Image (cartoon, rainbow, N blue to C red; front, side):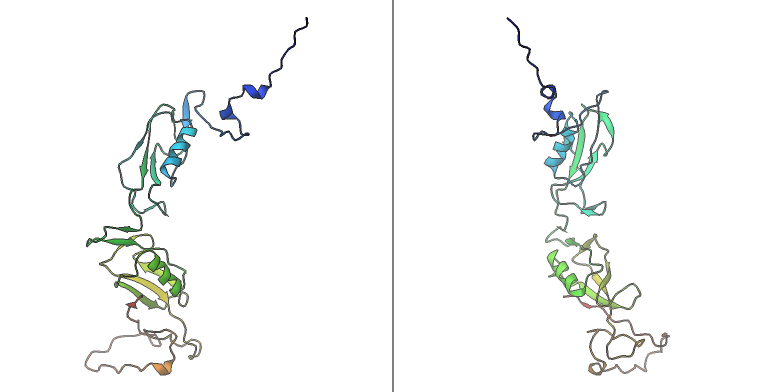
Length: 240
């Protein structure tokens, strides 16, 4: 009787973890020396970060780092539950059985110390926004009930009319509700004035000249030096 030889497909002998088809997930795993290359898990949710480390071949304990993230890391707002720091650093090569640590965001990055004198909100990036869009963004992040937010009209080459060019405090920094916040906006040219004339003073920057009564000079005070043709610096006004 002739014996039948069964040919086993080569693919059946390949471990599923090394295939890319059929829904299997590819992994890198330890190299021939038993080392792994640590992946970058920055800003990932914690569970996804742990899964990424395991796929890379990290077999040791993955523990928590007890430090605080702050609001912004590497120019990015870190959401609650996301990784802001890892050790070893991305790209490090270490033994597969060695441990790793993750620091995870545990605070609201946009608002903190509610009800305290040190209460704060995070200043959003308003630069380049029209005034009304900037107001909507400030309200969205929680500043709508803050009476210490001011608008400052400015005449600067870098400031486009009715557009935010900078803020104080700077974008992505924590601003206390008990301290002043200033949004600097370029003043709009007055359409009733010839080109090259001064822009309107404080108040509505587009108001006609006829609607504004110039203040009488106070003769009791010494005159101050002023560049001819320059417009007086307007005072800050409430932003909302």
